[in-house]
Length: 237
Image 1 (cartoon, rainbow, N blue to C red):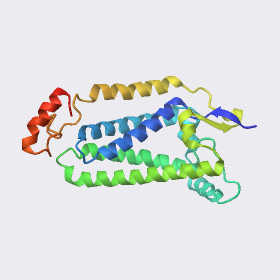
Image 2: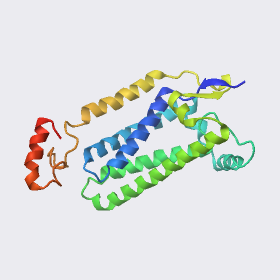
Image 3: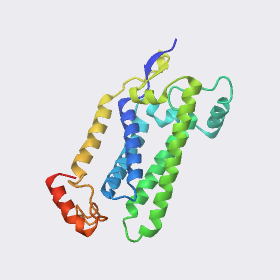
Image 4: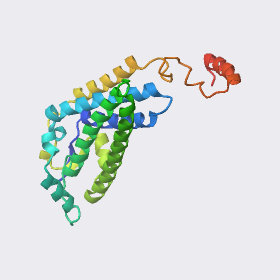
C-alpha cells in the first residue's frame, strides 16, 4: 500500500533550488551592469556542481548516480512506455530525467570554466561567444527539464515540484531513504551563505575597475550626475 515516504534528502533539495536560483541569477545578470553578481553566481554554480558530483557517490539512495543513470536501452524503453496506458514509474529520477541532470552538470562545468577563462586576455575574444552559446544551451535544457517534469507529474499523478520542496513522495515503505543526513544540507546552506557574505563587496553594482558609482551613473547626463551623487550619499534614490 502506498504511503508518504521521504525520497529527497535536505542536501539534494538545497542543491537543486540553489542551482536554479544561481543559474537564473547568472543568466539574467549577464551583459549587464551587475557584473560582480554575475561572477558570484558563477562561482556558486561551480561550487554546487562540485558538491553534487561528490554527493552522487556518497549521498543517500536516490541522490547517487548509480541509482538513476541508465543506458540508452533503458532510456528508450522509458520514453516508449510514456505512450502506453501504464508508463514506467520511478520513485527517484527517471532515465530521461537522468539525462537532463547529467547534461546540466556537464554544461554547468563548461559554462563556468569558459566564463572564468574569458577574463584572460588570451582567451577573451574566442571564449565569450562560446560561453554565451553554452549558457543558451543550458537554458534550453532547463526548460525541457521543467516541461518533462510537468508531463511526468501529469502521467503519474504526482507533484514533482512539491516533492523537491518537501522531500516526500508516494511510495512503498521499503522505498524510503534511510539516513537523510540533514547535517549535510545545513553545511551546504552555511557554505553558500558564508561565501556570499564574505565575498560580496560592499557595493556589488560597480564596474570592473572598482569604481562604485561608475556603472550607476554611466548613462546619466553630466548635469544630473552631481545631484545623483548627492542623493546616493544621503540614502535617497
